[in-house]
Every structure is written in C-alpha cells, then in structure tokens.
Length: 181
Image (cartoon, one colour):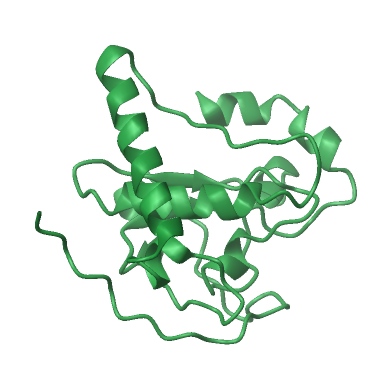
C-alpha cells in the first residue's frame, strides 16, 4: 500500500484578531479561482489527520472517509453534515479532520463550510486567523462568497467569519439554502 507523505507543517500560535490584509473576496465561477491561503498549523490545533498520520485518530478518519466513498457507490453524496445536540462535543474538529482526509484524494474537490456561527473555530484550526466568511455574506456585508483554498492541503474552506449577534436570523435568511444548492 503506497501513501503520499504528509506536507511539512510548521506550528504557529493562533491569531485572535482579523488579519490586517485578508485576501480580497472573490465571486468565482469555480473554486479553482479562489484566493489561496498558506496552511500553518497552530499549536492548539487538533488536526490529527494531518499532524499525526500514523495515529489511531487519523486512521479512524481514513476509515470514515472510505465508508463515505462506499456510500457514494449506491447513491449520490455531495454534502455531509456533522452535528450534535450539545455545544463543544467536537463537531468542528471532526469536520476539519474528515475534510482534510477527503481532500488528500486528489480525484475529488472538498469544501469545508463552517456552520457554527456562534463559536467559529475552523479558521483557527487551519492557522489562517480570522478572515471574512459566511457571516459576512449572509449579513450582506459582502456580495461575494468568501471561499479560500488552503495549500498544501488542497482543501477549500468557507469559514464562518466574525461571530454575529444574531446567528439564528442569518441562518434563516434564505440565502443559506441558495448557497447549499
């Protein structure tokens, strides 16, 4: 069994403030035209699928990815939702690790959309700081959708952006359904 080696990753402290010069938002025809961000794993990141490829945790995410690929053989599977009933159970960690695992297969494109508008954490997990994302688009602060490509992971992300005061209203605006289509 031949496997590609993991990218060399430097760990960086996570950023808490918005980056002074984030990439300009785009309105791409496809994800290939999105701004590219350099992936730099923070010290507190829990991305075992990237940092600890030989670990049991990384193996479990690979197993889950294989199971999802098997499901695709029987029916189309374009979206996967990770959810739970209570806060801080690890939804974002599971989603980020699964997305990294799926993105390692170059035959398919993987977009990680962060839906946790109350406690956004995906940007910090990938060491890109706080950048505009879904909240800014849903709130009408930007006309284009802020999707970014993370290199060298080959993964696209749509982060939540800045946590709004009214996350439920933003989610119910109807724009989210349009985006998912």
